Each structure stands twice: as structure tokens, then as C-alpha cells.
Image (cartoon, rainbow, N blue to C red; front, top):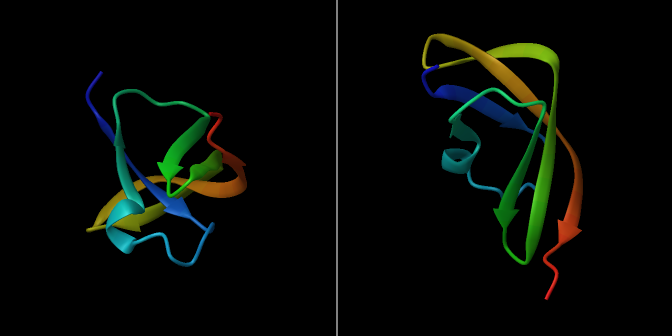
Length: 69
């Protein structure tokens, strides 16, 4: 299977727009994105959106966790 482009929706306002389009090696239900001093968690609920004229899965922010030290 080829790489899959997805869109991240919600979460911190300071998450840059260029980090909201992510390429995954394979489809998965949840994404854990390292950002700042923690991780932003996103969940796919079946919704899709458009990015650069292409329909892609939309992952919605569900929570933030700290990086364990």
C-alpha cells in the first residue's frame, strides 16, 4: 500500500498549518504527533476533507499527553 495523506483538525492553535497535513505509511485509527513538550493525539471518525484538490481522511484532536522522562 502506498503512503496516505491525512488532515489533522483541531488541537492547539499554535500547531503550524504545514504540520496539519501528515503522510502515513499505512492507515490507522489514531495518530500520536510529537509537538512541543508533549504529544497531540488525533482520531479518525470516518470523516473526509479536501487538501490540494484531493479527498483525504480527517483526524480530529482528542487529547494531549506529556512526554515521559
